[in-house]
Length: 253
Image 1 (cartoon, one colour):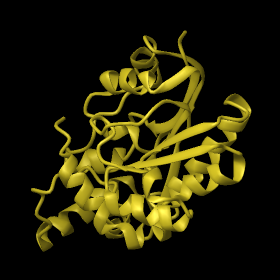
Image 2 (tube, one colour):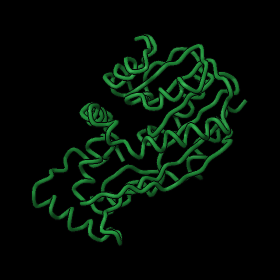
Image 3 (cartoon, one colour):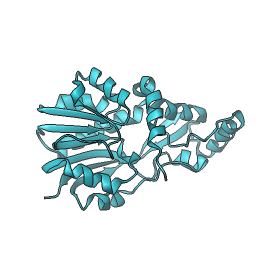
Image 4 (cartoon, one colour):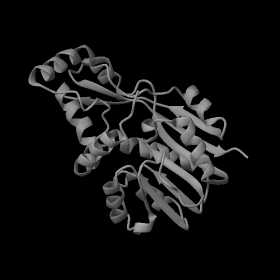
């Protein structure tokens, strides 16, 4: 699937004000990622790069956990970087806005960390190779992404969505550059009172992969709500599945 980074950037930029209030799954994922980082990751990295910082939810956790000498943040959306810098009291020089698959990265890092971003990679194998070159010897890559069941309800109805990888596929992509110390996944299901609330949720978090060409007319919205009935739970609610994967990796010597 072609990934339009400019469209993704526009969606996230529009969601800046509403993201934190609606990022229920993302907050739970960050909490779990930080637990894996504590259990399996480095004890005291001196230099850290966060990829896809968003509004700073993970950044704050990193600041609380580590006594680093340097912390840099990246996001596709410059306004996100700036918001996080203000929120976390970082200097402008610590912001690296732009597409992580292309943007110039200064120096090397002991830890590259990311939550809910790597699914947007257009070229994951090449990007893993690139990130490895910016890690110190035996440096760490710790991240969450999403698996094949992510947004499965939306994908079934709209026939649109990202191409997600299994844990085995991800391990194969990482293998030339990293030793995978720990990997696991889980299913996190949000429940909504009506199908249209699900569309509002993905809009308010900026995370939907439904193309911008999709015109949501009244008749199309009604059809979407009708189609979603097949997923209705016994309690009358409507589910939206998140399928986070977690990886703790160390650069291969």
